[in-house]
Length: 269
Image 1 (tube, rainbow, N blue to C red):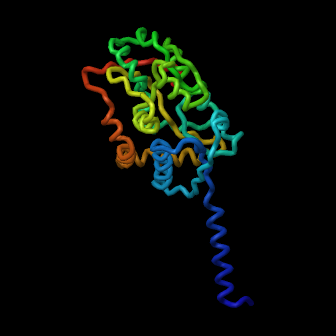
Image 2 (image 1 turned 120 degrees about the vertical axis):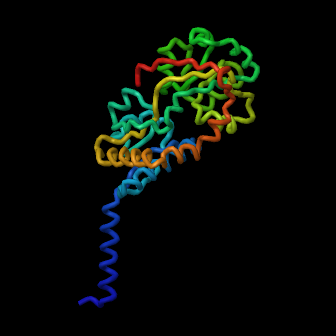
Image 3 (image 1 turned 90 degrees about the vertical axis):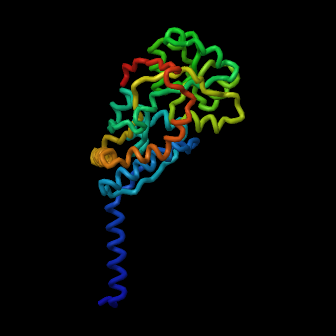
């Protein structure tokens, strides 16, 4: 017979392994080159959503390259359980989309970044047709690119994220649309440039950034969705969003009654 102390130790070890086995690892994609307020918010929101429904799991952020990111729409091929992304029909076909807009619609409201010397050129722009005379830049695989092109806007697709800011700053591109929740932080990151927000004009279109879950884990998708609903009903969702983004939203250079909103159609949403 084992000594009682050793028996207790063996039993404790067995229980520890059993508990670890019950806690599944949730592999969540994280872009290697980006760790900003938007990413931090989405990470914290996910943690809180799962906690609110007592879902047992350990979230493991898995760094991915830009090339891997472009292939993320098929989670099963990447051995990942989740990622967050702007919605598109292709992505919704390949993974379980949790259709709760994580940024409350602000991801579809787009400030126009431009070179300081170009601001005056936008002063009299009031229609989609007039904006179509200007050149824009977007990521070549971004859903936004297709949306803007569908609406007749002239869009140059690029693969290099930083190059989009550089070309716009140098005046080789007229404007670079950025969402309301990220534009101020991006201006800080590019503070040595001469980029500014066009103050009298912005574009908008219906869209959303969702959590996407591999089809092999419907129970995880259900837990995340239920957790987000619990947070919405308790007010925790809004409180967390405001903690991260209220200040930036309130400092955008728009004046009610003097700023034009050009609405775009989004047939892919």
